[in-house]
Image (cartoon, rainbow, N blue to C red; front, side):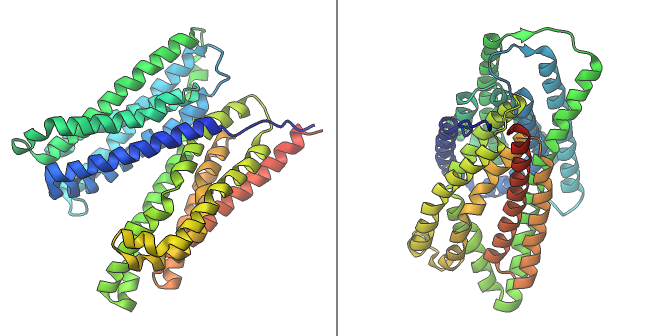
Length: 436
């Protein structure tokens, strides 16, 4: 007899999707006010510095939170062992030190070479508090998700963006007296500080409600748990870094190849239309599947810890739900491509958007499928799938002479196929163990 349960957390995914959509809208408002108040120069500097800051903190803000979510996933009733909290604290400290080391390396490259232009040493040092708060917030979100808290991490991002916007509107008069980039760093740091306080208070409340088990745990067990958490962090961190590397190489390579065949002016238009219009329109409905992935990770990890054979049923429902999201998106993008791109003032981008419309289902499936595999202990599959996808993307660019839609199609189909085949294989093996 196969165990069948409702394995998809639809209510939680709706909460995360709603909060994510609201945070993105507030983020657009913040960006518009930021450019208007501090100028294009500060905005350009942030567009260079912030992705590199996120790169330095990738382990602490991407890999470790997902690992802590899996580590703390329980049935929601038992007391929390104090050893788990100590393990999370040690992992957070190590991740923060790693992030500081990465930022120090990037800062050294910026000040000693011409490869990066991140600003003066004073500005690089001013970004350290923001970096540490990013690391701390990532760990807090991961622990809260693992403990079954949905609303706190979901609306934490809304609190963060709202705090940034309020700080910007309050302090914009100081822009004439201090460096605008320093003021921008202070605004972002203020937002992170507010959300840190918010998440810390909610975690304290959650711990008081659940209770803490002060039982003694041998040091060797604590060390093994710490290694397990760090090992679980490697897969999603590596996938994120590979994706960042792939996108960083994709556009310059495509521009060079297109310039050789179409000329620099046409190449610039094609790359700009793809990256600024077609790709964002394709990814817009992913707010729904990203919310599903965030909610699915703790729920599926909790079920896996309980020994329930839910991988197969979860995979079936996941495919159906993603298809229900992708079909309307495909129809809208395919039929409305000329109108949508014209609304952005780039009607020529419709030629790039039309072939991308057929990628909705495999692209939207990636995030929840990755979360499902992580929850069942197959996080290293994300690293393999990401590496193969980057190789397929760059290979397709070289073969097609810089055709960006073809390169994205090669990467998406490669990564999704690897993840889906592994999930189907593991689900079949699990069903054979839990079936009679």
